[in-house]
Image (spheres, rainbow, N blue to C red):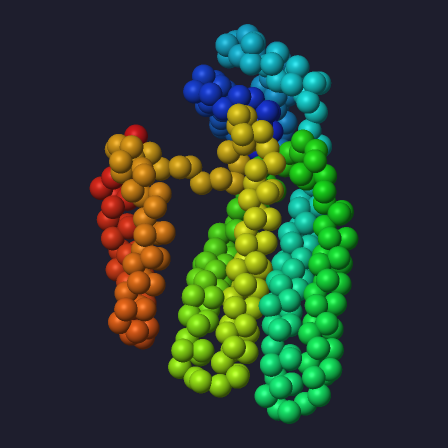
Length: 318
């Protein structure tokens, strides 16, 4: 049956994502399932049953009138002729995602080097070195950063078509990307959180220590923070780019995407949309006011529990 389900998804991939089309899709799957079970009960092999079901129900053009989808099928044919989409293979997607990770490292490292370039004159002055050494270190740091930016751009040119052309992916590719995104979700969120915290608290060394090395710590902390933010954002945006390739108005536009929860009111929807941003602000404010960073992390655990309770209470039941 899995083969039949996948074939059905491919049949309806470019159909409009409307209640009428989804109903027709469910009806067709029910007919295909009944025929399959009937043949299996008669002793037909699984492969033969699948082949027969697909041959009888696998042509949407022939079934359009019976399913009440004549208009929708015609619109799909017109759209495919007027606005054809380039099909992106799984191997291309894997290469793109690997390239995003490499580019994230390069761009993040480039930004880090640009930020810390100013510390070399400070270090040279602190350790009584020649001023030219500090200036030389600054320019080398900037030069390496520019090289990383240029090389990153060259690597990215291979996948410019994903932004410039209309593309599409199949359901299995979308599920692969979705799984990769979910597996890295918490790690990326941790990187962004640590990056933001480092940027926010970067002033602490200058406030606590009264020497020339305090600014060095500030720039290093900001550089590391920006690296983490940029790297995690590059990877996350890469996943979203692939999952948004398909036409959002079609059934394939839902591939790999989590269904948005429907809330009981507009107020509840707005509140839940800003929930985690609000928690982040509360966490930072409380942490800076109390300076008790060892305990304020408990805010996240409490917030997660409250979030689960609110979703149960505010989400509209189907």
